[in-house]
Length: 409
Image (cartoon, rainbow, N blue to C red; front, side, top):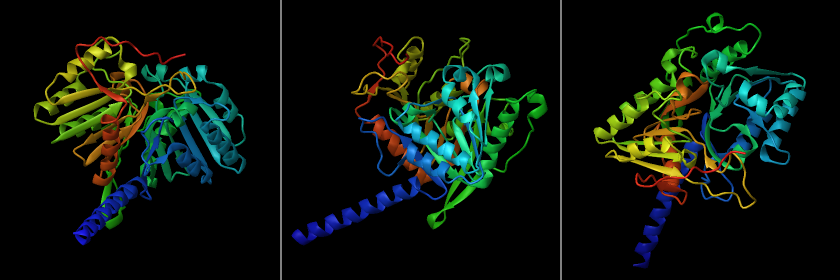
């Protein structure tokens, strides 16, 4: 009996080790890596997924010729994790790396100090882009490319809070052909932010041969399709975020899992925005199980009414995430889940910078990536379920009248 138990334990340990190795391989694949930021004092950390600061430092310190950075804004605080990133950018410029930085005009007015500091260093140029004039929105994307060979994109702003007090999710990709797509977007925005730049004169229509394929170990293929917004300002219109996201949901056969800061089927002009809402409801109608997590910043009218309406649809469940405040005191615009991603049938996923509201797809610059691979999607699914089943989520209840949570200054 003891020998049988020993063999059973040994077999269980072998299977567990194999599963953990598979997860680690997917998270740390040489050419594709999922990266996270975890609010301190929470249990959301995934040991096999590296943290943002480590990956950013590795990428910036490895830069040899160029760094192109497009961020919503840059907000640093001395002694906090982003401080190391800022110093790494300065060291890169000192060793001859050419740096170009784009930030949004509205947020630049709020956070000019660090952007200006970087813009004044040698080998560095800073431009401020006004997406209000260009498309009626903002430059909301968060990505950077290194030497034309690798890219990082995700929900992480260049914000000290994003590295320590916010749950974020992003990806690092090493592939020159994929990086070229994001490089084309960056170059378009760089020109638009310059003197005399107009969309008609600068937007060149192209067609990329997607998906791009990465061959993983054991001939396991990763199929990748870059995405971007807003409509009308994407060099290849087939890569528009909304089109790619709706297509994924429409192809779901059993399961849809999604998480973002905010979700709303009504635009800022109060018009109904049905595309994502209809896709989710149609999926549920054909028997697909839909699970959605949104942050408790959505506990306000009229957004909560739309979430309540969605939550009563058969096969759809909606939860708020509520991250506890830091023991050291209140931090504005922090202690929240800011991730933006979608999981389909344990086989495909999308990771991006867009919340799910109309303006993010029609007026605002965002980027993302569609991934078709079971191992990578499995990691995202595990991250989602850790939050879904964890201590920081609560089911949206139609009968409750929620109170908005303070999250600003």
